[in-house]
Image 1 (tube, rainbow, N blue to C red):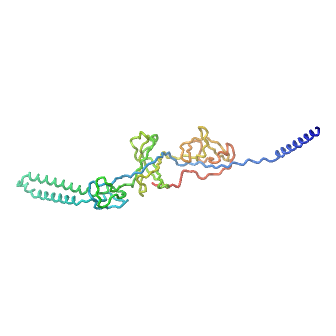
Image 2 (image 1 turned 135 degrees about the vertical axis):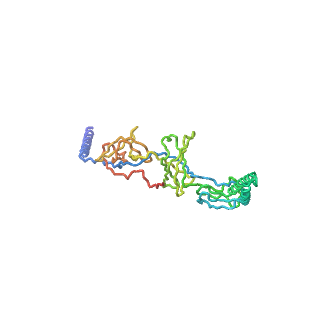
Image 3 (image 1 turned 180 degrees about the vertical axis):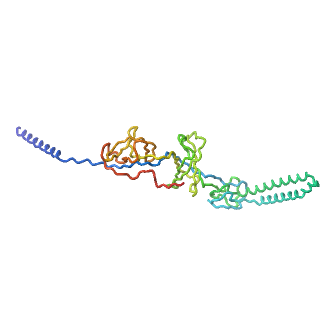
Length: 360
């Protein structure tokens, strides 16, 4: 028994010696420095921003009409091609008009006959050789003949279909020899040198919008283009179901790229101004307040309270708390804390500009 106790005491002494040696080695070993956190920052600059309202709209022609005949008759000639650009009063279609030409000729002959007879008796009436009643009768006949002539001319004109304004024609829907009636669609005509864009805006924005505001429009057909227009009119009524109001903008369309019916994404630009902006990734929300991490001259982190303004895709307007030239941490925020020294790298330029082409 005594022998066992002795062995236990020896083992305990050896263990104590070992742990003491390890502790001394640990104390004497040099402590490794904690690696410095890496962050990315941007330098604060002023940029032009604006408040905007977004909506969807549909392109309409400045003037648009469906070309139809006034009278029932056969088509004798078609004088246009599909999609052709035509001028005002250009003849598009003629209908059968032989009867109207004959009636016009007869009306002209009758008018000339009455005018000649009136000229013959003019001196006789002055000499009282012919009663004034006869002169008055001829004047009446002349006026009736003029009316008949005008009626015959109108009937002939009704069979000559012309463009009411300059524009682009649509597809031809009839053929020569077709019997057409009022309402038969011959083609369409659109004036698209200038186009209109109608879009709906919620009524809560109505007080902020004024005639003349800039409108940016985007189309899936031209993904790299921005079309610039102006707000020209606002409807007089708000839709009681949708609580939205229709607004209209106009766009110059010299290349005829915007076509009626085209869907457009609308951005109504308001309150353009110079402002300080930061990436959303730089903002640190804490309850009702917002902070950013600044870097001082020694690359130490400083927590700064800020006040934000409008928000856009990817960036936030800063209205108080920072100045132009301040270094604001945008990446690595979760790895640092206030007062810590960091290794900082300048971010790529942050801005709202893009390669999008703007069309006036």
